[in-house]
Length: 309
Image (cartoon, rainbow, N blue to C red; front, top):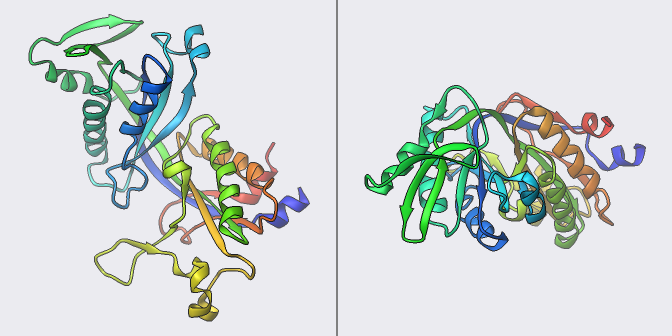
């Protein structure tokens, strides 16, 4: 543990509250499930310019699915959609996000079905709204123990739940991996991302779960809300001089960003990610980004989480 604490900065990741919805997608096989997941989570890496942040919190393989892991016994994936609580009309915004992504990316995917995962009050009546695509040929039915809507399609039928719940979550958990070169930093981030994604209730949203363009709040351009974190860009070390925060010997910094159902899930994901990344040879340092509490009030203290368990 002493060696790990030397590798890991005594700092914290600054998260912030969200509202999120969670759905289960099933499909005939892994191929079509992945097509559907890729579509429904597309352009959802960052709320800086995306309508939400979306990712997979759990994959359910054929063997687990056939043993009762999914309602219809087919391979599945649980997907979360997060919207920051500071967004105006956040609940209405989340409903529009889920309506658009379910109708445009799941309804259209061959063999896919869509089930609600959160039983909450209140809820979104998304099933009825998506079902309007049926042009008065849609109908209510109960299948696989779920009440829902059936929409006739050219491919056959599409089934989705009647109601979709939502509740508070957490966004913005993050870790930075400092390596002597791109290969080392990326290897650590890949290990960390895989471990975070394997943590129950946690999703990563960037390509491969990794962001190579970590940002800071604000910009020298007044019309931008975020910009490259120049002080941590290795190629700007000489240009910035004393303002640079890049340690000697660091040639690349990769970041992973995590969202989750609650703080406990984010803490577990952070711990698992750190332990996995620490196995990377030649990794120089693990740290995290924060803004002194200006962005959010949900703090994940790195030394605290690695001391747990």
